[in-house]
Length: 175
Image 1 (cartoon, helix red, strand yellow):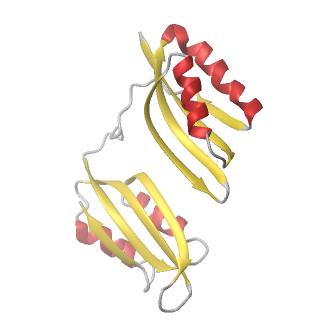
Image 2 (cartoon, rainbow, N blue to C red):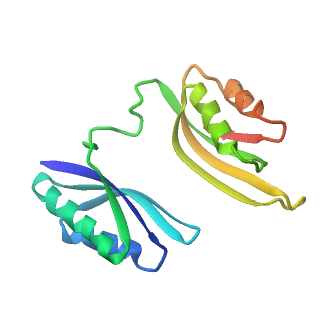
């Protein structure tokens, strides 16, 4: 019988981290199913879904935790049972991709995420960046957000709710 683990890895960025983690997974008879990884501010972080035989689970866990001695912190989600899916919120929804741009300010991620939550939307992926504006040189906030929006929330209501956060916030919507 197969089981799944969700693991998070964090390390000081350097070449070979993915190679080392993937080698440990393969050597311990795990199957790398899905992942998201990023380098940010000199750190490397990732989240990985691994499948393995139930009989191999304890050995896989021990082997992955041993990567700590190489400077790779591993957190294993013990509560994950592998039975969920990407749309397990129980509501009828559609996936929407948002591109958000605004002048940067403290709290903007909280404002946007609170707005989405207040509409009953579930954030699937949220990527942000801050950079200098091309014309003004002022700090600009950008986000790419994949969100499951309840069927009863139409595009106009979603975009209006986000626009109402501030006069400078721009939203592009893809479905």
